[in-house]
Length: 152
Image (tube, rainbow, N blue to C red; front, side, top):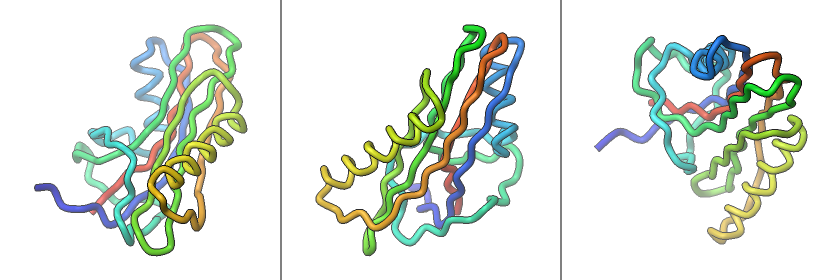
């Protein structure tokens, strides 16, 4: 059994690349977590997890991460990604993620709606929400990435 993460950070980045994969890689680097091996996880923030500005994680570490991303090769297209964390006063939190063709504001609005629905579905009282988004106007091949990275 893996340990339960005790810390998290919210990051976002964007970039252009020569291929879709390198655009994604550069967006991760822009977000500050490009030298980690991301393990995509679903949407639960452990109880009492502490939000930190930056996680100190050795390069190559397997890092639980909830993320949304979008890659496009349509010139001049506006793309965005966002993540949000909803907190309850006395229990675990919920993470939501999104990436698509829209503005940063639209992505953040969608995240807020998803967090609210997730709390309603679980019968939890929503105390506060933290959201981070990013947008990018595609030149040739662009990527947006927003994530909640968890650590121990």
